[in-house]
Image (cartoon, rainbow, N blue to C red; front, side, top):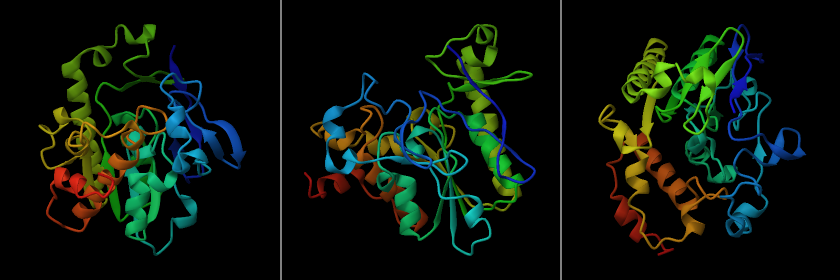
Length: 288
């Protein structure tokens, strides 16, 4: 199957936006732009963890989306606000797949600094999607005080045709990709990712946007040695930690404890604190 999205006219003046639902659509609407399930986080998915779903913090969780379809505060309502504004870009980890909104590291960090929580992250996002979203946002006249970019995997690419925009994912196969070099060549994947990463940095520098970079796999650290490496913290969790603490409701993505670790790591970084020992942090946690 292929995933096809359309460019659509959003509320940003003189701008086009892209919203892409990868891994499924929102399900069971419980309010305006609010859904009980989203993407792979639904009972029909084989990895869905019904035991985690019954925990108090997950039982009544929903996905509240803004009018553009992002899990974010309103864009236009805060455009001219004097409040500090944080803009997050990334994939499902930054989107908070499988966890309630109050557990999202982006939301926890924004609340800690009493900042507007703008989030352009999407499930299954790719580096081009981050680049396009940031460029559209800036071109539409939006400016954040801090841009926090959690770079997606470089295996995820896009194919742009005359009338379609197709995302390539490792478990999505389409005839159009078979002769598409970037989607099948690891070196080209890395090169394309690196070019887009630098384009994102360029947009931030050109528009005087302070930014923080995050990676979620060790292999990216060699290219971005100064980026926060969330994976290094995730790997430090005790082996005996239960899935109830480690995993999200969808049974795949980071859950309660890693999300807390990610939020604390980013808060400490933004406050200029010396990186703490993640193992010591965990052992001092009263849950252990």
